[in-house]
Image (cartoon, rainbow, N blue to C red; front, side, top):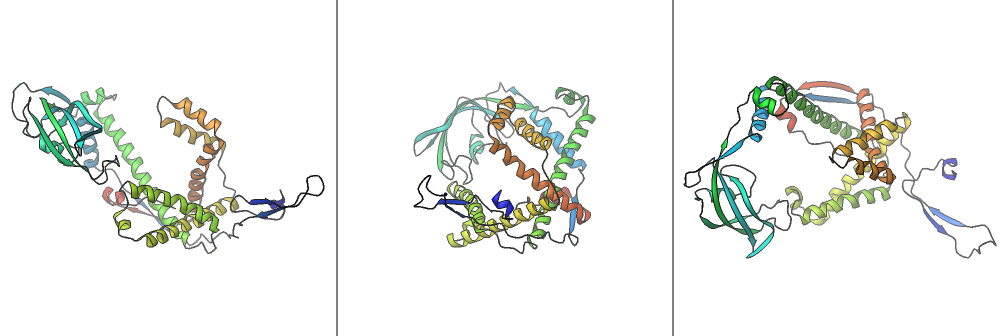
Length: 368
């Protein structure tokens, strides 16, 4: 209340220190409060904003490819009775034991695994070296895990796999017709095409929004003519740097960042932290000055969306948010930001531009 009376808006939690020497009950309690204040931010002139909304339309090639992918997932496999070497297109049923430095590693042993010769999904060089094996044959192959392999402890390491071929299968393709459509819950093939088209249109709309949001944030960044509270910048930088360190440890640092020395890398990410803080403050102020709020219904929709990400555990997710108000509040920020972004886009001069799906897919995601 005291801060509000004096028109003070702290950037972060104030630091309160008791003044030493005061005896309890003998004198009024004295304390010292230190805080970093939010800067004065005037609503910028938004009338000169000019943005481009990119639009792409699903083409026949995109729909046909999606249909082929669906048909590919419906394939069945039939056993090949003939004893012969595995060739392109065959599926080899194998047992294997993976080893690094001669020791079997966790998750590297499996039985009755289907390996399609010429297919994807395995370590580079794995399926290629199984080609030519005959059921009953055993061999040891050598591979190298990719530098960006998901299991960080294996990334970039050389490994061997003891392979035992147990049998051969051939994939049986599924015809792309009404019968396939019925198997996956549709009345006919036309309904599948319509569903794919709607899904692709939604994906394109999301990509288009990411682009216009990125362009808007870039434009607003030029209107942040105020100093960012250093405490907020330091806190944001700490979060960013934690992710950078994790990526570096996992070998997932961007190639461009790998070439930079520590000082340059820190400087670059500190600038990103400052940009994020200033843009966040500007968006918050635009929202405050224009009475933009997040409704209870919008919060409930966000919680429901989170719950739907965990099928079968929805009630546990609802209970988690009920017991953790801080987690619930973490959902408010993105909703508020998107409402402010939508408000500003409505004020801007927006030109629509048709692009190809490939051009739209090249658009980088929006990022504060």
